[in-house]
Length: 89
Image (cartoon, rainbow, N blue to C red; front, side, top):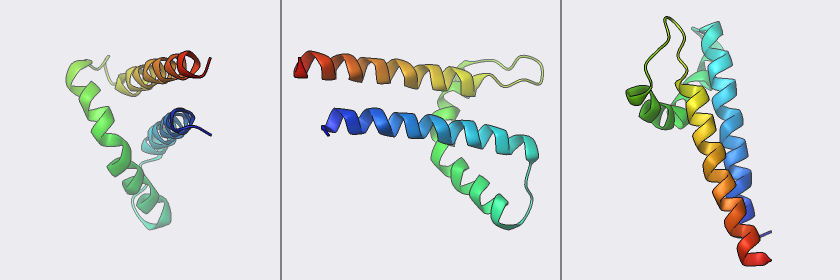
């Protein structure tokens, strides 16, 4: 497993974390283990999501910045995969 394939796998994992965080935000946990998980996910994904919240306006009450953030990660992942295939043949 090359370093680039590890990066691709980490991007996949980060995208999953974003989706879980967004789904958990709909539940609005207030106490307990679920809240602790939600806060931990927030500290991991909010820096990335925050970049897009500054740029992408909300559509009414709908925040589409997570979608844009995941698309941006997918583009980075595509670039890494292209680089990986170019280097490895």
